[in-house]
Figure 1: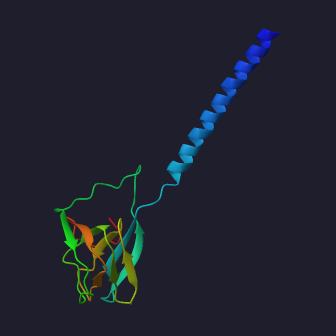
Figure 2: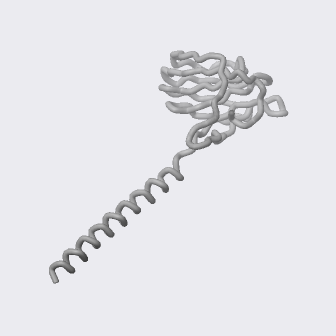
Length: 155
């Protein structure tokens, strides 16, 4: 009788282990499937010649974007300052804020809050442009893109 009881206990423990392991794996799958998307604020010139802002989700394949060709990378420190005049981007580029806060204003009066981790794709290289307000010291990385064609995909 002890032999049967011991085997039942062992099988029960193995079964409990397998169920626990399976639940852990299922939880990892759920977490992987619900990762936060990478969002980009795209500043672009519309057909009306005015700047606009839209949120664009970066396309990922297996958790990473395709390789994006750039012509360089520049780090800069930008002090707090009053609003700039209306200006266009000098070229198609990513501007990623590493620290500090700013605000971008587009032609329709919409204001885009910018803070650490914010990725902006600047594509308003023609037209009226946008206004930049650095609200506090801001550390930025600017990445000019090799492909200067505006395609509206956020890539």
